[in-house]
Each structure stands twice: as C-alpha cells, then as structure tokens.
Image 1 (cartoon, rainbow over the protein chains, first blue to last red):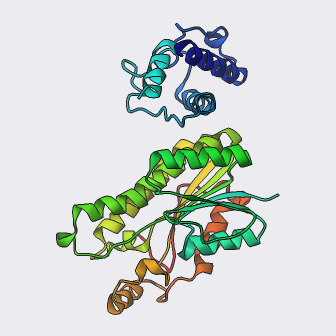
Image 2 (cartoon, each protein chain N blue to C red):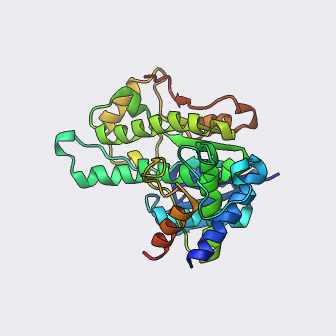
Length: 96
Length: 233
C-alpha cells in the first residue's frame, strides 16, 4: 500500500513538474524534499500539488481524502516535508 | 456555452429562484439543501447534505468535477438567521448559525477553488447582510457569522487572485423569504428605516449584483462587499 501511495505521489510530482520545470523535481524519489527550506515547491506550487494529489488518491482508493492539515505549512512537522513523510501521512489517513 | 454553476441552499428562497433563473437561461446548475430537491430540470443536479459536513461537500464537488469537468461559478447562498437578544442566545444556536453560514461558505469555497484554480478562472459570490454593517441589535450572532464571511471573502480574494478567481460578497437587505418570517413587523420596519432606500429587497436586486460579480468582464473586481439599499459600513 505504501509503495502504491509513493508511486502516486511521484507521478503527481512528475506531471506537476511539466509546468514547473524545477531541477529538484526531475527525478523524484522517496527522499525528495517537498516543502520547507531547500525544497522543491513554493507555497503556490504546494497548493497545486496537494489538490492534484487529492484527486488522484480519491480515484485510486475510492475514498475522498482531505490532505489539508494544520501543520501543512510548518517546516519541522509538516507531512509535506518529503515524499516519504507524505506517504506515511496518507497511509495513516487511509487506515483511519 | 452553458456555465457550470454551484448554488448552495436551493430548496427555497433566493437560492431556489436563482437556480430556476439560471436553468432557464441555459446554464447547468448543481444545487444542494438539507432536503430533497424541489427543482425538476434536465440541467439540474441535486445533492442532499449539510453544508457544514466536510465529507459530504468534498464528495459533491468531486462528483461535479467528474461529470462536468469544470465549475465556473459558486454562489454560497445557504444561510440561516436567528433573532435573539445576545443574553438569551444559546450556545447551540451559535453553533448552528456558524456551521451553516461560515463553515458552509468556507468548505464550498475551498473545495470549488481547487477546481477553479486548475482552470485559472472562477467567480465566487458569498452572502453577507446589511445587519453586519448596521450592527443590528438582536442579530449579534447572525451578523457576526456574516462578518466572518466578509473577512474570509476579502482575504481569500487575495490568496486566489493568482489563479484568476474572484471572490466577492453581496449584503442584501431583508427580502420577503422564510429567513425573516419570524421577525416582528415593527422590528422589520425599523430596519428598513436605516436604509437609504427604505424598501424590502427583491430577487432582481440580488440577481443584478450577482450577475455583475459573475460577469466575465468583472475580472478586476474582487474582495468587494456590496450592500443593497444604500447601507454602508
């Protein structure tokens, strides 16, 4: 399940990067940093990414996930720090 | 081309009239209310839900996106009012008013904006009231919930501007709908006296402002609150 989630996140990043042309997102992996210092996405790109991802996840898992989180914009604890932390966060939502 | 319009609170009052009007004009309307649909039309889709139910709102907007691929206009019309002295206002009444008026507007705006953002076009119209500007006694909670909507409108207008989504609000005067039927006549008359133009609002007055906000030409108009009847802050 976690691999599947990670695959969807990476696909979404690749698609998003077709518009962004960001060097850091050329070959995204589980270690790719998403949001925070020296990360790939600025706040507007993060918003686009979250909405794209919510849509993909709801199609894949047939569940209307909401990724909004009060810690979303916090560099230290945001689930959006990296692909890895985001996968873990989504998995926890799906298991709820 | 038909516009795709989401209207909340379409079972009666202004929401019902607006839905019928836009359907007659050839637009596609997706509406909701707590009850079953009161509108039968080929281009109308109804969802029965509480506007403050996050899951239900997300489901409705995702289903709309799936079917119509875009949403051009959102009218956050659903609202409830309650007149009471604040000393005798129950906590549950405050929760109910904020749930429908503020949480509903927040949830629909958030979910619909996600779609409008990708199409880099959208018009959101929220509903305030002259009671907010007039600081009407007896309407403290209702007016506070609408003031919250005004502030939300102006802040998200800034956050959504990069995506070419405009967010504005209309502040209607009393209109003869269910919303005001419980309010005593003398109180209502006293309220009308505070307006520059002392009469009830009509459906046409509201539609006129909504049409202005939703016009494609209004792409430089955002974060504005327009009160009817010559009321101002």
